[in-house]
Figure 1 (cartoon, one colour):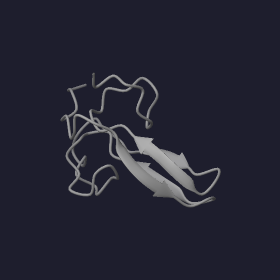
Figure 2 (figure 1 turned 135 degrees about the horizontal axis):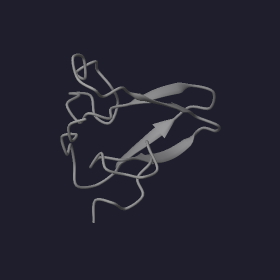
Figure 3 (figure 1 turned 90 degrees about the horizontal axis):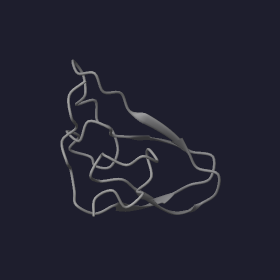
Figure 4 (figure 1 turned 60 degrees about the vertical axis):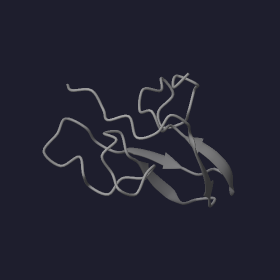
Amino acid sequence: MSDPVRAADTPYATDVEEGKTYYWCSCGKSSKQPLCDGSHQGTDFTPVAYQADASKKVFFCGCKITNNKPMCDGSHQ
């Protein structure tokens, strides 16, 4: 598997709605960061589903090397 593109050096603060599913871009190529736009087609990458358990602000990983996909774990530092 190839390495993902580092989309950002910081997490993406994103407001999510309870019960809604979001698809985090794992390849780093999406033009709709941090969410998937299908740019991973033809690669080994697949988007990671995130089901919002409450309406709140979450921090999706921007560097794409988190060990807590899709949330930021500070790996970008």
